Length: 271
Length: 86
Picture: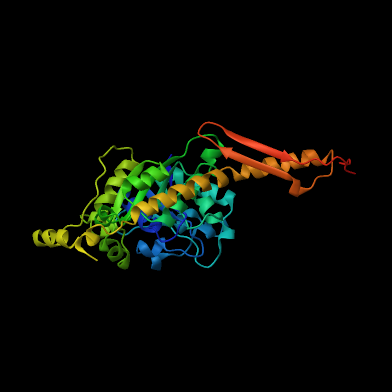
C-alpha cells in the first residue's frame, strides 16, 4: 500500500504545486513509483508546471464521474518513467469532487503506487478538505511571512480535525516545508527566521527551500525543479526533503546559492 | 540619519513574530474547537427549550482551552416567569 501525502498551505502562491512536482519527481528519480494528483479543480496548474499540459485528455473529475478509466487519465512523465500525473479538470468546478469518488480514486492509486501526492488547492473549502481527507502524511508549505504562517496554523487545525486519521483518533503526521527562504534577510532581521516559524507552528521541519531564480526558470520550461537542474540549491533542498519524507534523518541545512569567489565577497558586502 | 542609526535600523521580523504569537494564541482559543462548542451549544439549547422558552440572547457559552483540559461554561438567564414551552 502506497503512502498518501497531502501538500497543503491554506494560502495561495506559497509553492504547493512547485513542491508537489519537485518532491514527486525527487521520489521518482530515486526509483519509487509516484503519482502526483492535482486537486485544484477549475484552476489546474500541476500539468503546466510538470510540462504535460498538452497531453491532458481525461482528468480526475472524468474518473470520478465514470467517464474515463483511471488508466486513461494518468499521464506518464516523459523524463522519469516511474512518475505519473493525474490532472484536475479545468472546465468544471470543485462541486464535481465527491467524497466517495475521491475515496475510490485514492484507494486505487494506493494499490498501484508507492506514493500518492495530493496537490491541494488554496483555501479551506471542499477541494482542500478532500485533498487532505485520506492523507497519511501532511506537508504544510509555508513562507516566512505573517499571512502564510497564520494560514498554515489554520490548516494544521483542519489536519487535526477534518481528516480520516483525526476522526479515527489517530495522529496525523505533519511536516513543515519552509519555502522562499532568504537566509540573508532573515539574518538582517527583516524576515522571520526558521526557528521563529518552527516555534509558532510547532511541527517538525522537513526542509528549507531557498528563494531562488531556479524555481521560476524550471516552471518556465515545464520541469520540476529537481529535474530541471538537479544541482541547483532548491533541487538539493527538495532531494533532502524527499529523503526525510522516506524516514531518513538528515541534518537540516540551508542550501545557499552557488556563487563565484568574487560573487561571494561582493555578495557579503552588499548584505 | 547618522551612522549608528543606519546600523541600528529597527528590524521588522521580531514585530512579525510577536504579532503572530498574540494573534494565533487568540485564534487557536476561539476557532480551535468552535465546531464542538457550536454543537454543544445547540444541543444544550435544544435540551433546555424542552422545558422552558429561552431567549438566544440570554445564553452564553464560552470555552477556554488549556494545555491539558478545556473548560466549557454555559451561562443561562432564567426569568422567574419562565413558562413551559408549548
